[in-house]
Length: 294
Image (cartoon, helix red, strand yellow):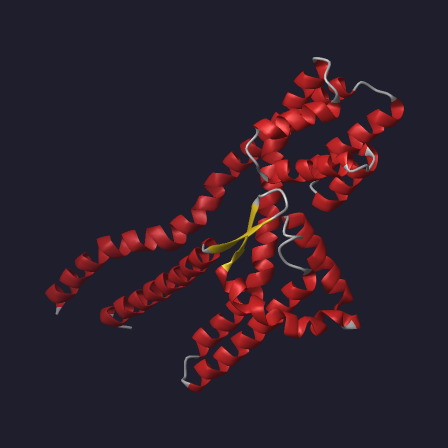
């Protein structure tokens, strides 16, 4: 292989990598362009514009989610929608219908690309359309769980101080929610607080919160509060212990991520940065050497 062919190959690979990064950036931008949808407590809930484009056609294809073979998938999607906090924005049937519509659209575009000879672009388009909704929903769930994990220790500290100062648990929770900026944890606690106000017992409301969010640390805290209420243990002391435990866990997780960073950055350096540096340094030298020997 001649040097010019090698340079052409490297340039082609670099162009392919650039196109892939551009496609990823485009989908990230489309996910960032969102449409507002408000819940009962005026917290905006948003869907990506790519999903919103197919949403008007979803009611005509809800029958797909009602098949017996789709029962398990529908239940799993519904659980993820609840965990993501989009229960009042989109239903499981509509989401499955949107996934089917996007997959069908991806197949049509793939066929058009195959007829024009662009096979790779066709399969890439099909993969993006078929897997984007589920990937977006999974990402939202993980992001929401992480947000709850970050906010939980501070909320527990505020609850501990309020309860130890002699305030009732629900009164302290109401005051904390009124003064905090609304986030994922605030949304779930506000919903639970309203359920208790409407007459639901605190034990049942906390259990439903645990089943609705399914965040391991929040579930552990809620189970401890329920057990403390049943056994008559001091809630203030329990909240302090849980807060310290979660804070230590957060520090441990931060140290783990910091230790993993050098290993994770090694692959991009070797695959992308190191070859580019070697090309910049060695190609001029090799060109001059070939000219001299020629």
